[in-house]
Each structure stands twice: as structure tokens, then as C-alpha cells.
Amino acid sequence: MNLWHRLLTDEKGQDIVEYALLASFLAFAAMAGVEVLRLAMNAAYASWDAAAQSDALVEIPNPK
Image (cartoon, rainbow, N blue to C red; front, side):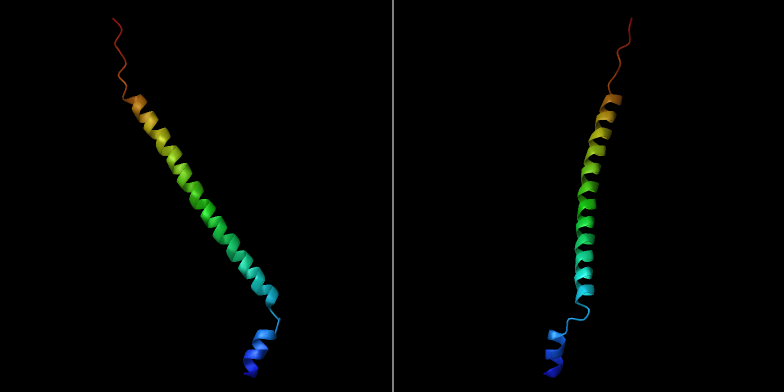
């Protein structure tokens, strides 16, 4: 019981734990942001490529 009381009341290392939690939160937010950016860029490039491909398939009339 004394060990539990000592572990719960001891504040040594509290700053390190808080910084670790903050760093893990920032890393998670960065990964989520990169994933959203990746999906948006993928959609933009796919749309751009589809438009370029459809323009390439248009037949140019032969002038007479």
C-alpha cells in the first residue's frame, strides 16, 4: 500500500510525461493532416489526369 501511495503522490517525471503526451498528440495530428492532404492531392491529380486524357481523345477534324 505504501508503494501505491508513493507512486500516486510523487511528481518526479511529471513534466516528461506531459511532454511525451504533447509530442504524441502532435504526431497524431500531423499524421492525420498528411493523410487528408494526400487524399486531396490524389483527387486533384486524378481529376486533372482524367481531363487531360479526355482532351487527348478528341478527334481533330481534317480541314479540306
